[in-house]
Image (cartoon, rainbow, N blue to C red; front, side, top):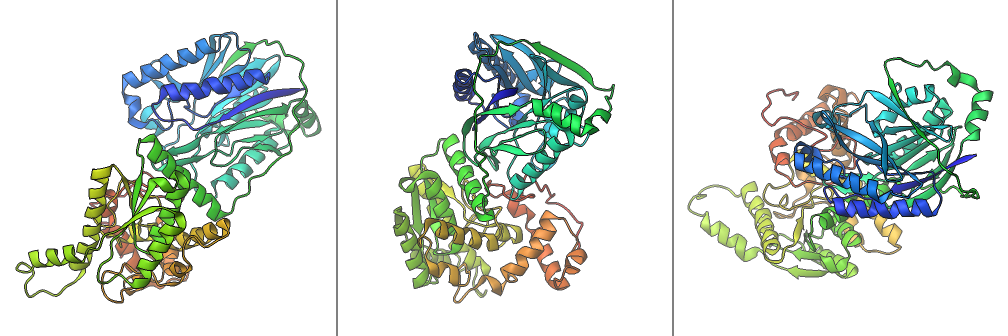
Length: 575
């Protein structure tokens, strides 16, 4: 005996109900053609996720209900049971799953555990559900729950299994960060083993502003073995047969599940479905595991995030300031992978301090990628600025003011090209620079999107090395890897004139930002206390800059912005 489930691991577009509906209809048709028992979609797939303050607009909620009714009508004469994420509107708004078949809405499930950490704000928008949903499908009990519901040790899955669930269908929109895929696989495998219950975990894929959803849907059997893994970072419609008789066999041999108590605090909503099963042969699948290197995961996440940001916001081309350095090189190859070389414009803006090698490396990168590029020297513009300020700055030494003028001239040039031709300017700052303020406000921070703002400098190099290795040739010139990082805003300038070595800096930043450790706790991990204080001071004093920066793709557990919400006005200091 088996249950056949079609998983729609798909990329929704927030607020594009028509496009999302078309994907839903196509997936239902595939499920019906394959005689599937169930077809499942990701969390809030009908609306797109996360809708944020659109939920406060009643017109948005009504449009969502309108399109749910379109799905209901489309399901007419469809035998497959459809499990679709949407916003239910009763006395309040609920993050919900609708259960539809044969032109009817048979029931709903309201998500109970509403996350309010990291990038999530669900308690701001939704009322939690207070009952579990079980589908009695031809005398097989199937539990429906949503994303966070499955992550709690004592959540809806516990109550569903204790009331006889033999299969769990979970609709999810689980954001990516480095290492999340492995964590997810281990957790779901253990969960299904502990409860002797197969799990179908259908995850969203695609980019939504700063968040990337990585897909990688998972199906486990009752012994905790992963029998299916969806492609990471790609759309995929998959048909899976899940053995149900093994559930009983496992319980007989290992009866721990008998002792799970049924808690009366949970109401039970049971939906009875009798469905004619067409005789069908079991689909035999060989299991394919997608084990990606860390750098490959990061690159795929950055590429998908940029691609969806550009396409979903109706931009056509992007412009990037090419410096011949590593950051702009990596952003450029990400853009080419995401959008194609015909949609990427490189702009070299050399000054009197730009080395001949940097110009050569930038040109070589552009030619290797076959992108269009311009060379616009800034010497004359810079001298004009200095003349303009000559009276006001009279008697004062040149300092970071003149250095930052160069960065701001470059930002102006890029934004002029953006205005004239509609290019989206990509900022090229990395997380190490963004954290310490080593990026010029209204200069190299200028841009509409900042793809690597959550990638530390040391990881930028590793991802770039992986990229060249994966391509099997030198796309990013080798000289870019070996020369010392420099903004080239004064003679012989090096990043390490001001900052600690990036290996030390990034180690401190990860502990201070990701783990929120104190300066003394960090120094106890082998870092010089004065260096730690210096770095912490830079992070704290530059919060105002980060608030003005462009959005960028989250790839760490704790990114700047929605993840890490520090006040600008703040007198608490550890340094």
